[in-house]
Amino acid sequence: MFGTSGIRGPVGEVVTAELALQVGRAVGAETDRVVVGRDARDSGALLVDSLTAGLRETGTDVIDLGVAATPTVGRAVAWRDADAGIVVTASHNPPEDNGLKLWQPTGQAYGSADRERITERIEADDPDLQPWDRLGTRTAGEERTRHVEALVDAAGGPDALDLSVAVDLGNGAGGVSADALVAAGCDVETLNAQPDGRFPGRPSEPTPENCTALSGLVSGSDYDFGIAHDGDADRMRAVAGDGTFLSGDTLLALFAADAAEAGDSVAVPVDTSLAVEDFLAERDVGVVRTPVGDVFVSEAAAEPGVAFGGEPSGAWIWPDETLCPDGPLAAVRIAALAADRPLSERIDDIPTYPIRRANVECGDKLAVMDGVERRVHDTYDDVETMDGVRVGTDEGWFLVRASGTEPLVRVTAEARDADRAEELLERALELLEASR
Image (cartoon, rainbow, N blue to C red; front, side):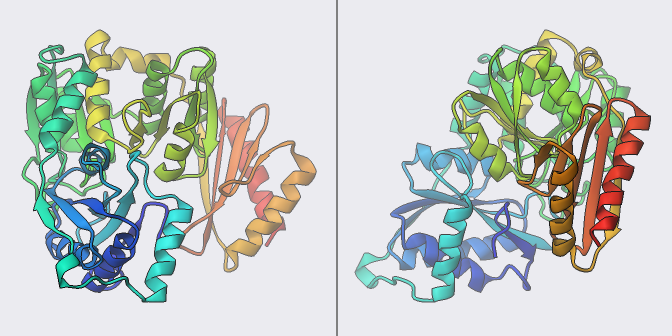
């Protein structure tokens, strides 16, 4: 039922009002107060109604933030002294999808044990329904202003930044970023600012292909940089003042180097570029690798000595602020960096290495992965199996990982020069072929 990013899928098929009711009842069985919110998808209103009905049936009080960015809801759990938060969102997925993501008071998403417990409650189908005089309440809440205030503080205070910024909200719920940047002193122009769950301005995911209008606007005008969010604003991507769309690894390196001091570590998923590790090593900052998924990055970022966590897909976590990926916080942090030194200059300091990828169709991908894991231990010393099989060598690394949704095994290889990257890809493909 739950993936690493909660429940997500097509409305009316995977995600239904009945499912939202069941989730509400299951979460309500172990909570007294829950904060809920949703992105701009029309289906969200229906799902929130069902979700809150399930929560209230079990005696849980609901604070409904309405249409709100996921990080606003994530932060509000602690602000409102609630036991949990639930966001109805499919994040960067297309408009036909929706979903539910559950949050702890720390700002972390529900971990695997929490998700399993909720799943067991749903499957047991024995909700703890309360009588008429013990039903929970539903009240409207507004935490956007408090989120803006926290973001302005993170930017250095009111009017601290004298910048011109283009903000592409992707018709999503991330307007808090524009509010915060304005309050911090920036001259802001927005694109696709009207919340609309059909995402008519561009597809929700802020990829280079989907953000060509933002890149063109920034490069053709006098903007210092641009930022883009997905539908619920847990992700943030950026464009330098010359129109260059910054890769996720480049952003990760910039944020991590700014957040961490010598001796600290940062949490990154197993598919992060070697360039990030090299860039940070020059600053005596280490990396802690995690499985792919912001839930795992958040768990690692909560550990002592870990100053930052990030995923190249655009999820950024500053544990001293919140353990929820906060796209608006990333927006003001990148603004502070740009105010100190242009992003187009900063990215020149970060190396880029050749990376090679391949997809191999495998009918029994799990059995193939077992074979790959057995074989690599016979040949290599630096092997990690937390999420697929990652092998480190003196030249670089390769990752063999089963697709979660297709009968494919994905192979990625990276090295500091192109020939070595090709060699590592070939080695990985040979291992895969020998395991079929």
